[in-house]
Amino acid sequence: MTELPESTVLAADYFHAYSVVGLLAVIGVLFVAVAFGAGRLLRPVVPTPEKLLTYECGVDPVGEGWAHTQVRYYVYAFLYVIFAVDSIFLFPWATVFAAPGYGATTLVEMFIFLGFLAVGLLYAWKKGVLEWT
Image (cartoon, one colour):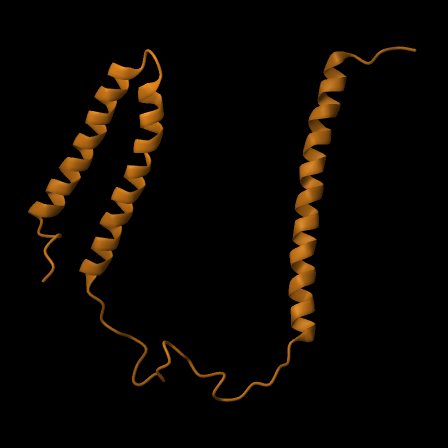
């Protein structure tokens, strides 16, 4: 009996692993499709004018759907997202900082990173973005 070359065996294992992932993805899609299909078939459909009315927070809509929104709310949200995402980088830094041989390098990199954050915050403060009036 002849042995298969090692590259053929590795390729077969490689594609077998991906076929398992593909099969699980197909099963997942089918599960969702069956659940949505069953929900569509089993739910009662009784459209009334009240059900078709736009509804928000228990108040019937009055007037136009367009409302003026202050841009500063978006700026606050944007600044929050920036600093929240940037703070996520502090956790991996803390683990690398504790590793031997990386202390000084990661400390300098973190001060550069915090400097960029400070410059961004200073810029937002100078532009008056952080004033709530």
